[in-house]
Length: 244
Ligand SMILES: *[C@@H]1O[C@H](CO)[C@@H](O)[C@H](O)[C@H]1NC(C)=O
Ligand SMILES: *[C@@H]1O[C@H](CO)[C@@H](O)[C@H](O)[C@H]1NC(C)=O
Ligand SMILES: *[C@@H]1O[C@H](CO)[C@@H](O)[C@H](O)[C@H]1NC(C)=O
Ligand SMILES: *[C@@H]1O[C@H](CO)[C@@H](O)[C@H](O)[C@H]1NC(C)=O
Image (cartoon, rainbow, N blue to C red; front, top):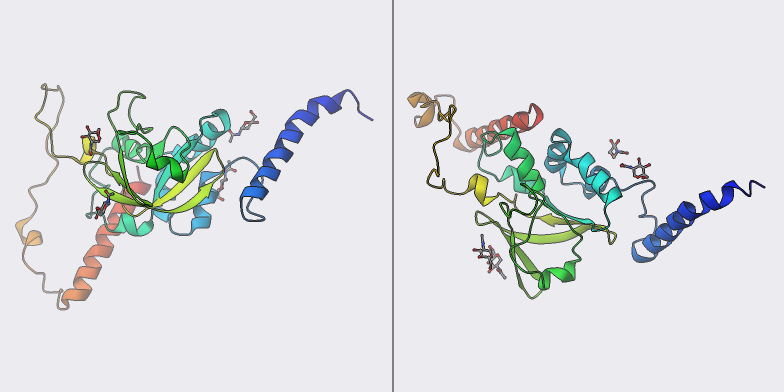
């Protein structure tokens, strides 16, 4: 009936149809999400990426990823550290970096192109990530493979590529067992190249000596005490993430 409107509608519609068909052919049935790709929803389905989801939210990089996927034909690859990966970080790791570094840390887990699992066998090092100014290679990752195992090295940590959480030829999400800590943030301090104006005072509050080494009397049970310390430190790290 609305012959004039029909051609206008039909192109995007058939593209969408095509996309849905390709997806349902290559994925498990009923996996095709409705609407545009939503990295948060994908990770939520994975069930063990709570901390990474929080980081994507507080840095607003989740939205950015969705937008970028919508606007690019290069696709993206995301390395998603599990909650276990975050909880095995040294306590305070995320607390002690600036918000800017937090953003870079998350961007470091994103490659500006789609990489199928098989492509890791042939990529050339170092890989460029989304962190830093594009193209300056400030935040590189190296990949090594041995058989089907893929290792990702940052110079600070070696992570092992785990399950494919999601792939659709545009976006690939792979589980990693470690948080990828960039060398330029977490590496050994490089000899200061030039004096920078502005307070670079060490924030380390020389620490009350009593809190450092000696046992507090409350720590009657070592195991519980340690678990508590861990939990408190982790909670503090979480707080740090939330209140950027
Ligand atoms: C993506 O999914 C999350 C969680 O399911 C939801 O809160 C958010 O609104 C979604 N974003 C968009 C743009 O639909
Ligand atoms: C994706 O692109 C479409 C068409 O350009 C636009 O209407 C939609 O808002 C975009 N979605 C996101 C999440 O950017
Ligand atoms: C990958 O990392 C593991 C653990 O760090 C190491 O044992 C293994 O040799 C590495 N494999 C490759 C191919 O680099
Ligand atoms: C990564 O690979 C490049 C090229 O092979 C090498 O120069 C660099 O030292 C490697 N970096 C790390 C952290 O392994």
